[in-house]
Image (cartoon, rainbow, N blue to C red; front, side, top):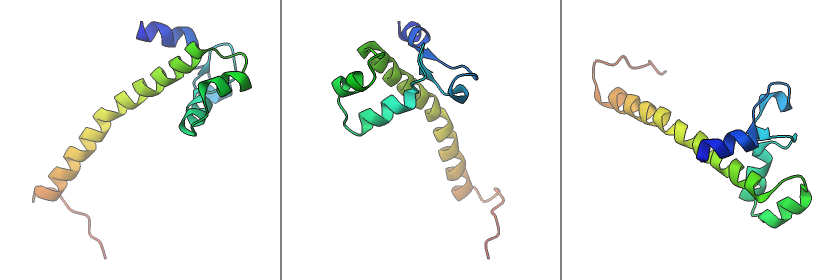
Length: 98
């Protein structure tokens, strides 16, 4: 259901908003919805300001964000592992700092 909801409601097309994820059938970027929610703007107010949106569109934007962050975790763990190895392992070449 999760991926199904995203594919029905979120679109990524290089011809629309330079390929940023948007609500399908609109030019409303997912980022705008997320920023408004982060500014404590209510869902009702967002729906009032963007009458083409539905509450399911906003839910899909949140799901998209969650999925995006979920994918980032792997990269963060790799970076932390490298930093730990860099700090502990004497064989890792350290940069020279003047």
